[in-house]
View 1 (cartoon, one colour):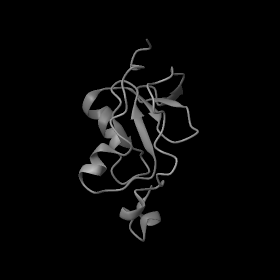
View 2 (tube, one colour):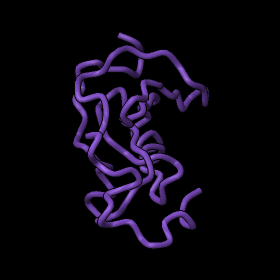
View 3 (spheres, one colour):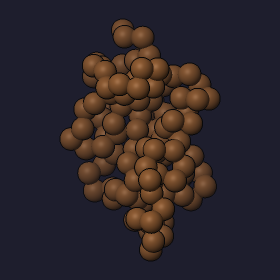
View 4 (cartoon, one colour):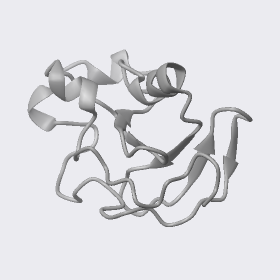
Length: 113
């Protein structure tokens, strides 16, 4: 097992945990490779994946977007190789991105970085 990657950790859901709790929205989703926490990317208003790293020290995030299989190491600020994680490997294809669609403000493009 690679440090910071736990292949058996299942994702915590299909959307950003913190955004879901606050009826928020996200641009793209990231998955903690150590514990499975789903957070939103740094283009999202909440930046919850990075906040998860800052709080827990879990260093590696994986994309949780369909068709993407990359990993990011916050310690080195570089893409890294990673091993297959427990399914599912992404949000459902039919789930909107950005999303959830019913929570997106009309001016969402102006609110992203």
